[in-house]
Image (cartoon, rainbow, N blue to C red; front, side):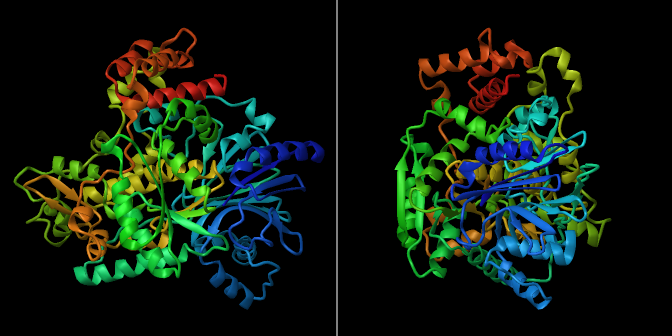
Length: 616
């Protein structure tokens, strides 16, 4: 896990070296174990390293032995040993034991098709000097970030915004992307490929890109697509066995490391299952980390302690007294664009705690999106079904329609607008009313990329469509971004075995009714049924089937807990020198504050601080 940066330059190599040094220094928190730079043939590559695999031989940027290629890489490739053996059979030789050198050899052997063979989390840039080209790629599910920008004949890419801000030609040209900010106000993050800046984009998950240095042209190419095709040939018992085997193998693959590691343990189903498998695979107790709050409704420490005791981990916990407003400037600087998921604050704290003991952890992120865990899925399914109609019929009806469309005519098509109504921070009309009147005409209701993602699983049930949106937008642009930035602020690598390409492709074949159960009488929604069945062998029912908490936080208390905090919030957003007033209507902002909508207020505070830091 590292920080990467690269750019083309038309002028002096000496100037490029000075700028590159500043770029790499801005990423030092991501890679405290070393830095490297390479300036050659109008291409500059930089790297800050967090050493996890091949501690002595994995320094970057790494050049091929013949000097024709060089790479800067962020992430881990979990099947690199198998790929290394394949490549050695094709005549490639290796100087190190690192996964970085394997990617470089894979590119030399298979070209851009190499990405289809990689299993892991990755973002990298490869300089192909003979072709005078940069090749960029981001992993299938967007675990690792990759930003890029092109202005005139100059191109740049990086792990974080602050590295790009070190480039004078780019920093001086940056403008606010109003549509990106509008999407942020609605869903608390900016869905890729947009960012908070017009000139900077995010490479979409599962995409790669070739950029020729002499004539830069940014045309991303999709190399992987998640295809939903439920397999009805297996029984439920057979599916359970297949799922368990795949989950265990994924956790095992994510344990490849040359340094000590542990796991985040919230006490929820996902992290508990990851830790359970870790304990079964390893020959030592797992280090687990958890933070809690004094506010009991938000404190999951008792569940984490119970899980740690049953599994037998070496458990570390901490009660945190959070002043979110004090941490806000630091979060804004590292996220680099408006990002409103306030659980970034406790994620920052649990990452700090873990880094005091280990440089790498596993987490349970991805379990909800792939295995139907969010309560919003249940809420939406119930709105699509009359009270007398069992929810299971909504899940299986698309397949009944295929068998006999006369007997089972299709349901009315669900819409993305319906779905967003369950998950957005602000309703469309309210979000639009926030803007100054002269700016409202420039805004779309929601991104076209999200609409296409919703419509792609043609003929699939509503639950599959909304999961597809979460997998391709909420998961990479919110959840994985939050974990990457908050953990890397402390130089901590976080791996997510449920967010794995093999798990994704397996889940796309599981009939959704096997993932979900509902108690119609009580209106309870229980997703992640395979997880519950596995854990029920060792954990009591009150643990396995309790209400989902998520990483809930006492945001109301952070922002409105006392008069001092409330006054500070109002001063930031409504004072005569607030930057937000240049974009938003003060009366509408006041309505958000008066209604004490904590999450919407946090969005506005993040936006205000971002505008101040960027001097907009």
